Image (cartoon, rainbow over all chains, first blue to last red):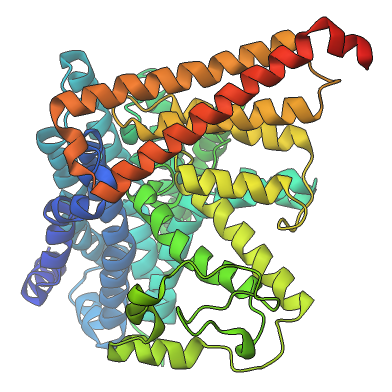
Length: 255
Length: 290
């Protein structure tokens, strides 16, 4: 696990993770001051819950995938990957170790967001509160299953095509799955185009992992008998992306 | 080694695709794939409400552009343009005009220099149409961000119903649907008294449309609609009393409180005239006349 330790130490020293920690843990409390919660106190807690999860999503999309892409590219271009190959660390193993390192930094974000929601924005009624905890933990889990394979994809694409392509591939996929799919559906409703419908059905529907609306209206936790289905859905996407990343990743640049 | 690699990758891909399509079919059957996109949950959120307010500024400046008569018509008192005919009365009295007439900060001066219209001719019909469409789109967005905002909902309603300002002709059912969505959204609010006013106004708008198309609606339907207006006003009063008691009303600025009062007064007047209209329509002499 030398590459894992090296990557982790590098990311730790780079200190940009502090911004993410700040955005998820502190910023929601500042942002609520510019929400309409200042006029209507009933909205202060929903404003915190919304902001902390929105920040967690933004941090993964902008910081997480960028960092992953950066590691992927520098591993291939700097000769580090080649060095590890000669010491017997296979390409897949390298991909896994770098992925694990970036994931270690990203994994606490949904947990912080859930903690902020549970400690600072819990509903007052006891039965709603237990439901609130379950909702937050479910979404923390979904967040991890959604973001994990996208990190691997960013590393793999960047190792072959460079940092910008790696970063854009993963973040575009994430934004498309979170919001674009919905707009595609609206378009599909207007025009009965078979291709649009097909594209829509086979798109990664990441919006299932976006808790902001569910928390805002206290819709309650996802039914536990349906939750495994969601995990299976994102698990399937995870496996496909894992296969793709394995295919695309390379430990040394051919040039 | 190579073969092992290929096998693992293919197995991963195959099981992934199977799991993905299995879960996707199940989820699609349950109707879970249908949703309305809401980036970062901004629409109908505490942040959306603030953005919906902020959008009003842009709408204002665009709307102003629609009525521009050309550089020759700029009012000397307030610095605004009151149209080619000068028919609009200047709302600013000579005493308080200074701050509006000449921008005193550097940025405000720059903004004026960059945005003022120096062309002596009025805006072309095409440009005016473009600006009106721009306003309409922004109003739609503002309504989506916060359907309970009184000004945004009513302005959007005006754009949809008034062909002179709107750019897309909309059938009455669509407007009624918009009003109904607004009402149901506003009634979800359990603390702020202001959305109830928007609901009352939306219910009043439906009533007005019923009067316009009175052959399609029965008197009982109109009476039921009037009850919605009454309920919304009662709800507003109840929530406001609660806010007065808890001291939350003091969080609002004096201007906002005055705004609430004016809107309530206006809605009460609308309600009264609507009731009279219903009474007139239901009286036998009038019905026999038509």
